[in-house]
Image 1 (cartoon, helix red, strand yellow):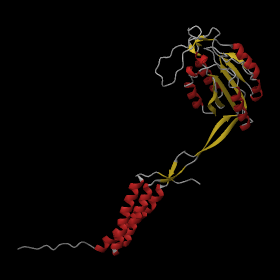
Image 2 (image 1 turned 180 degrees about the vertical axis):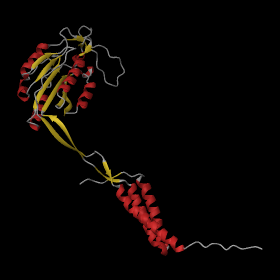
Image 3 (image 1 turned 90 degrees about the vertical axis):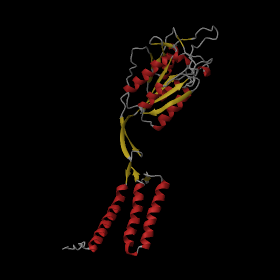
Image 4 (image 1 turned 60 degrees about the vertical axis):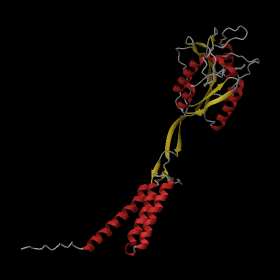
Amino acid sequence: MNSLVLSPVLPWPVLALLTVAVAGGCVLLAVRTRGRRLQWSLRAGAVVVLALALLRPGHPVPALTERAEAALDVFVAVDTTASMVAEDWDGDSPRLDGVAQDIAHLMEQAPDARFTLITFASTTQTVVPLTTDDAAVRSALEVLRPELTQYSSGSSITEPLEHLRGRLEKAAEDRPENARLLFYLGDGEQTADTEPASMAELADLVDGGAVYGYGTEAGGRMLETASYWSDAEPAYIRDPATDAPAVSHADPAALQRIAGELGTDFVHRSAGTEADFEFPDAERLVEEREETDAGVAELTWILFLPLAAWLAAEGFLAARGIRKLGPLARPAVRRTR
């Protein structure tokens, strides 16, 4: 059952004080004027009804909406280590620029699919959970940045393995009928001392996808990433061994190995080309949602009915009083001689 919603025209204390004062005055006059008790009683009731109308009572109006959704879940895992700002994409732009463009293009090709954005560096996090809200994913892409340079440490290209497994298993449990695609976007540079783990255990949890590689083997320099509130001009990351600007080199072979373990294709991305992918034909589902904040239907008009009745009664009593007065007597005119 819908709950009652009140939107007072005046603050509660002011409205209560005015109601008590005016209605109380009408009641007092009804007691003291015996011949007009009915009129003043009606006026006291009208004041109370008017006060209720000024509360603007109403009830929420639910709206039943429908939206199309494909039975397709797309997982996008993005490398956000410091190497992803290496300036060897489309000349001297950061690699992450190419990543953002490709993800936006993937969403255009599958507009009804659910997308989730996952980033990884020294740790992995879900930035946007599975959703059909393209605006949420695009907003996240606009602020996509690598981890802060001061916190950067050696990282593995298979860091998101455990996180992805958990998310994929949860999606399979929630919607087993959906197809699940995994897109891995990175440069393949392994900076951790350990060997990369195998991603093969994810192969049975996905129905396809691709590994996209960015950067060149010649490499590019990387600007430091500072916190948002820092006003310092970013400098290039320097190699502690030589004190020269550090250079990040892409490793396509490492990415090809990951693609082979996942059972997907490896595509080396370059500027000026589209990241076209042949998405499977997924059944279009229609999901119904009940929105509880669609609006409020005001009930004030109901309270105007007794007010109209009161005005009619006041008019009737006034007319009856006028009739009792009779015709106005005309004053006598004295004649002078």
